[in-house]
Structures are given as structure tokens and as C-alpha cells.
Amino acid sequence: MALFKNHDDRFLKRRRGMVEQHLRARGVRDERVLAAMLEVPRERFVPEALQADAYEDRALALDLGQTISQPYIVAYMTELLDVRPDSKVLEVGTGSGYQTAILARLAASVCTIERMESLSCSAEEVLAERDVTNVTLHVGDGTLGLPEHAPYDRIIVTAGAPRVPHALTNQLVDAGRLVIPVGGPHEQTIVLVQRRGSRVIETPMLGCRFVKLVGREGWSEHQ
Image 1 (cartoon, helix red, strand yellow):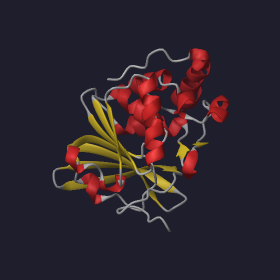
Image 2 (tube, helix red, strand yellow):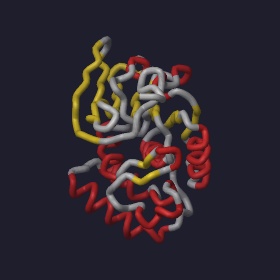
Image 3 (tube, helix red, strand yellow):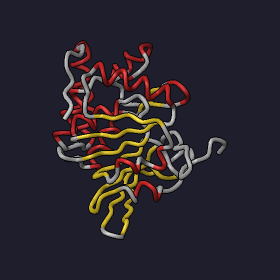
Image 4 (cartoon, helix red, strand yellow):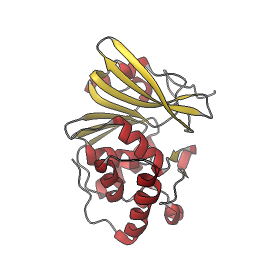
């Protein structure tokens, strides 16, 4: 489990407000998730010009047309994933590294993959500054997962897919969980996928909006 050391706590009061007003008050109940959201400094994962907005409950723009998800959605998806202290987690879509940092606080290990090398490098720098040591970062097509490191207890996808990628469900352990936004290019539904032997059970949960998951089992660059 990663620990975050020596970070600037000028934002601590606002982080506490985020947890109480935007997360707990809206139904997030997992105390481990709430503690992780309180500990991880979201302001370090957004552009400097947007740090004052870091604890508003909304998505913020990153480089290359990407976004950092709103805190409630991060907490909701993380709670739904049900990460255990001994879990091996795959994250598809490293982005800023914020969701990665939350997962690192909860899991034994995290493999994260990002198709944009510059984003992966930026996330790696911030995670290193936070003394996160249980994460391995990869660059590639996240829709194909990371079969060389499979299987995974938990998989989370932080971009919207047209369907659940078979490559990802195939990399889940039996009784594993996958949380993924599925739908059109502009609106999706967060889906909980559970593997039960040869069966894959998909349960729609909450409406959402994510950037497109681009890759062989997602959207093409031109869609």
C-alpha cells in the first residue's frame, strides 16, 4: 500500500470539504476509499493554472484533449471496484495519475497503461514525487490490457468504451471485478463486470461522461 509523504497541505481543508460534501454526502461509504481521497493531493495532478479548482466536484482539462475525472466519479468507481489490500489491479488510462494514486493507496500493486506517452511520463513524475512505489506504468493500447502481467483481481477503465473489451474480461481472475464506462462517444453508463467461471455478468450502474477509449477493442482514432 502506497503512502504519500511530505505533500503540501495548504489544500487539506478543501480536501476534507470534498470528502464530506461531495463524497460522503452523496453516498460513498467505503472508509478506505474516503481515506484515500482525503490523503491524495488532487491539486498535484492538475495543471498549475487549475490548482485552485482542484476540489470542485467536476472534471478538469488535461493536455491532449484528456480530462481528470470529477472526484465523485473517482470515488464511486473505486468503491464499486471493491479493492482489497491484497488486490492486483490493472488501470486502463493512466491520464494524470490521480486515479492511479488512489488505487495505489488501496491495493497491493497497480499496473497502469496509457496510450499517450507524454501523459504517462507526467504521471510517473508526480507519482515518484509522492513516493508511490507499488505502481508500474506502461505505454500502449489499453483496450488489450497487459496480458504479460495477468491475471488481475480488479480492472478499472477510465475512458468510455463502445463495449466491454473481451481482452480485459479474459485477464480477470475468477470472481474478479471490472468497472468500465460503456456507451456512445458522448454519454456512457458505468458498468460493473463480474467474472464467475466462464460467465461474465454485466450490471449497468450510473450514467457518466468520459473521453473515448481509443484502441483495437475501443473507438478508432477517427470515430
